[in-house]
Structure formats: C-alpha cells, structure tokens
Length: 389
Image (cartoon, rainbow, N blue to C red; front, side):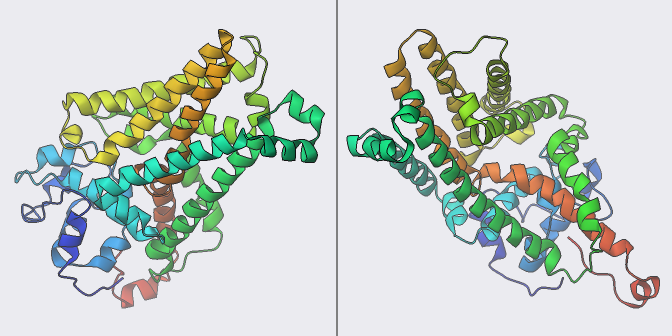
C-alpha cells in the first residue's frame, strides 16, 4: 500500500503516549533483538521508519504493533535509548483510535479526564438503573409480564438477564464494527487477493493465539508474564461465559454445595483474575522491568477494575454465607458499577481491546501470507512486491 507523507503524523501519534522518533537512527538493533519478528513483520524498526517518513497509510495498515508482546528486549538493546517497546504500545493506542468509528477511543487515550469521566458517567448510569429497578412500578410491571410465581422464585434474575444482554449487545456492536474496520485497513484495501478457503483454514491461528497466548511465551524473558497473562485471559473468558450465557444457573438464590460446578468454576475464574491482575499491578508498582518503566493511565485502569471486580464478587459471596442478604444486594450494585464500565468502555475502546486485536492480527497476518503465496509466479516477478506492514 502506498501513502503520501503526512508531516503531522509524529505529533498526532505522540498524543497517545511516548514516541521518541528523534532518538531512532534506524540501525535495526531493535528488530535483531526481537524473537518474534518474521520476514513479513520486521518490527519495531519498520514502523519507527514509517512514522519518521510520515507514512500514515502504512502505519494504519500495519499489524505489527499487535504482534509485539512488549517484552522490552528491544528497549534494552537500543543504543540510543529510544525505548522502541513503549513506542509500539503508543502505536497500539493510536491504531485502536483509528479502528474506532465513534471517536471515543481517541478521546480517552488522549485525555485522562475524558477516560475517567466516561467510566464514572457509565457507572453513575448503572447505579441509577439499579435504583429504578427497585421501584414499585417496575416490580408491578414485571409481575404482570412474568407472573407472581416466577418473580417470587427469582426476583432479580429476569431484570439481570435483560440487562446482561443489553450490555452484551452494545459491547458486541462496538467490538465487531471496530474489527471490521481493522480488517479493511489491514487486509481489505491492501490489494492482496486472499483465497476464500483461507478465511476458514487460518482460523486456527486466531483460536490458537487467543487460547494459548503462545506469542508471549516465545519471548525469552516473559515466561512468568505469560503464565499470569494466560491465567487472566482464561479467568475473564470463563467468567464472561458464566455470566452472559449461564446467569440463571450461575447466579442462584440458594447456596449450592462446594462440589457443585457453579461453585468451583466461579472460584477458578476468580482466582485466575486475582492472580493475573495482581501480578500486573505489582509489576507496575515495582518497576523492575523495562516494560514497566513508564506507565500510562490505561495501564493502571484495567487491572484495577479487574481486581475490584474479583474482590467485590468475593465479598458478595461471603455476605451471602453470613446471611446478610441486604448488604450483599447493596454490594452487588457496587460490583455492577465496576463491571459495566469495564465491559462497555475498556473492552471496545480502551486497553482491553488488545485482547481481541492481538489474536486477530495473527489471523490477518496468516491471510496476508496465504495471499502472497497464492500469487502467480510470473506476476510476483514482473510486478514490484507490495509493501506489507
């Protein structure tokens, strides 16, 4: 893909975080030090060069920031101390804003006030909806629709189910629309003809990366981080499935025995989230590794919200055991005030977006590779090779 030089590109990208384009001499040491680079993805040097030249189209069409797992090896190897690892993270925020059609990603990544304000506004809205749900006219309406017997057995489940699906629908709308834009920027307008069968056969790259986080494991200094990251992603996915698909089974009025799957699956997901979020926060507090040397607001918000989600969930469980049902109901409202902004803001627009952009990047890269391999030999020789980022 060809693009005209944009002299404002460096200034635009720097609004999303640190990007030391002046310190980079394009020596290639960063790329040589990275165990994840390939012939198709030679980061971070190539992207640093694109930004230096103002090639915005090449940057937006690149998958490389998502293929970087932020181990910090390139930053340690850089002779100019330009911190290319942090530059790649800045480009992630920048690309998240490019994929987002609402403009909210740009707002929250460029302004701390916007980021915190949006989270608080959504939390306040959830609190207001919770208050309305306890009003008499709402309960009367539910009785008319569902009947007294259903409402007496599970008074909150119908409302919670409806609210869960509303949150899931909004989140899905934002995520899927942004993913479509990501595909168009990186594959659709690249000019490459992807074999139709590859869209199915290469799905293995998507599911394998999402389930194993194997790219992170390939970083030699990231083995401990791989374990905590895998635990966090697995715990979040398990809790997501339990809450959105099996709420009536998972969230019950009675306390089931310890051996019941509802109990130990919930404990397993909670423990994984506590371990992963706690490890992320501890690393940023200690700052012993290069990747934790500089942290933006969104680096802190997500693990804090995940930790609060797990802790409030545990406390609700404890209060129910103690028979303090009214207290547990109030704490549940606080729990939802944390969870809903995290799902509606952090997942589609904030740092959590990398949880689906990263495996999708591996999938789209596999599609590009298939397209290149499928090109006729004579065409590949006669025409100049496409610039693939």
